[in-house]
Length: 267
Image 1 (cartoon, rainbow, N blue to C red):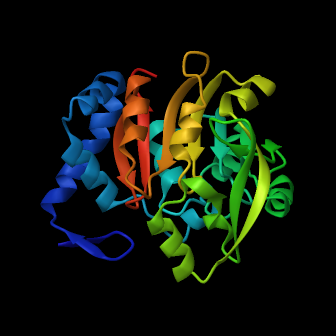
Image 2 (cartoon, helix red, strand yellow):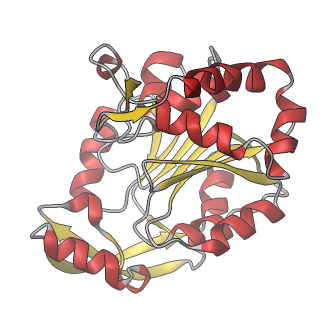
């Protein structure tokens, strides 16, 4: 037996062979093998990759920021060594804490768009991410103003009020957060992309505490090419997967039981 994972989960040594095979799976013929993923082949192998590794060691924490190793996995296995890519981070918070995009800006020279609706958190974002374009709005498929629930003391759990499900509200209560209702401006994601001339996104990260489907529906995939999507899926929303599949993005795996990764075959 060998140790693996943040919680010391044990995996038989026979799994190591499968783990090593997984690298060949990705590197030998990515386009063909991602198509095989879409047909449901090798899913067990990919899930083993998730269980076996992609957690941070002490050295990693100097560079990576994500909660469950999302940035490390995407960087090492979907965009190995790629510099000067483009990211879009919807629900960027302060740009550093548990950020899925900070590594790409600071270490790989990527540029992109970070979106955070809470005004004082947005000021921290601007300070922390000088290489990004930052927007202080909600993202939804409705433009105008929306009721936004700010969770004081646990701002990362804040979100559009009518998109928070009961489980998320219980989580807020469990964290001891107090909700303050705010009216905040909202724009479609495609509106923001058009504003900044973005028509190709290598890595799209969405963490909006319940409004993820709205964000995805506000993007015109015929006008904007997206290669990889990381979307938080607290509620098990199946329509996110259906919508992305219709637009050429296949489910790859889930990291940390919360964040689903989708990949465009043949990118």
